[in-house]
Length: 626
Image (cartoon, rainbow, N blue to C red; front, side):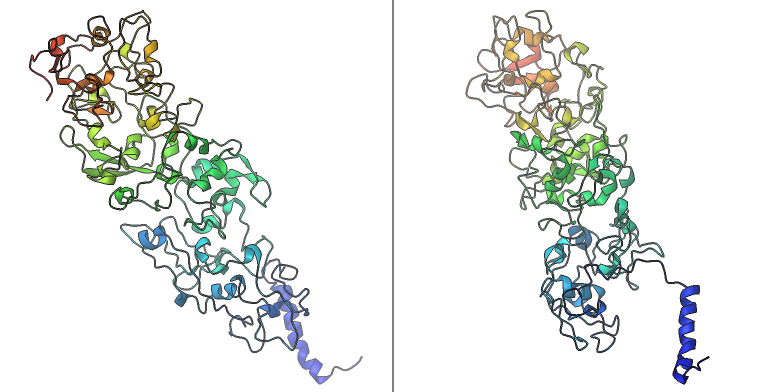
């Protein structure tokens, strides 16, 4: 046997130790796939050294991790949002936070400016590489469209009780491949990416199936039961394998890199454009086409007003018209995409439906008759039994949003639906619960269409009147061919399709002159018997003695509610409640009104007017509503 040299003998124990260590204590299982990955820059560079482009054993720029690549000298814009920086009071990173971080090392290539071959120690070799990263891997210097880095994770209860924390943000569990760093739990590029291991693609630290990386830290309330999380609709994301909407999860709407540059929250598109990816024209198979509704003549300004919405909006300050003109109506103002479920409302009722879960609205405290509410209680829609659709609408269409200065052509609906009014459509309460109304409060069953025939106790939704003109369209006040988002099939009020004011007609034997009248969606004004009206006052004003009386001579133009019973208005009423037309009867003409003892028992003494043609019949008998 040949004798070992002294050098070999001294090296043997170390080699045996390493061999035993590898056999008895193998390293953690991982795919060491830097070689051949996009991080292997050696092919075509003139060197076979894979690691040299980041690391060197000698003359390293930094001891840890023996860094060999030039460090970026660019100035970066970091991610910021109202949610992180204002609501959670977390300061946005600055350039002072970058030096010495793992993120700085990643940006030394991914800034798109620093040469890939810019190394401190070439090891005696000549290296030829492209000057900088190109394509999607080039993050550039504007990181506002990338997942936030250099932020500190602050899990726990959210504002306003504990500013700077958020219950929907959590720390990775111990041992999870997703990491945060230091006592401050800082997020770095390497929180989600392992530059040495590409087994999961995109150098992710673990599989992102079902958005597992996202949900390691982001626990969105109610998301697991939401329509977007449970959907099995087939979906093939751009450049990805076929999957389902539910499996693609967070990634349907968000991009961790290269998101919309015009909107925070790393959305794939700006505001409604994100929703239109599935709910556009045409829609994803199995989804509703919402974009087509915003092509209609009357619509919420979802597409026409941009860059006004904030996340979150916890009060009415961001809906003001004056002085900031922040009026807006984005999809997120009515729908919470993390909690909404499938299922719209069934009349008669006014509870919110599944599609509004997770949103919020306000419950007003009513003042005196025909006054705006100035006190409100914020309501977060945690279920469909304790919250009302009108609460969602009133956060924009009331004093809560615009104070004493409403936007043009907008009325304060807490004035109109005030339960102390003499009359109001039963949006907030059934007619029997309309406190300011006097008996008889309800109409007869014959004066109502199904399903609103329950005498006085039924309620209704705002969207029972404000909806699409086409029954097959998705429900809700998105768009309509009728003005003011009037629901079909009848969409005209107070003028017909030819712009003539609706009247009661003259000795009519049919109701053809009422074609398209909006009120008829719920109120059958005439019976099937020719020349017979369900209200005797209507009957009398369509006869030979007094005929062709416009509806707006007696009723307010805005039919939400009024100071007097049965939506009657007085001549002193101002616009928009008074039509104020040029003709004698093209405006409100009454000076007094009191309800009859039954909904069909009106006599001339129930009304009083000083207008020629009316005054001789409707004289002042007293006892009228103020």
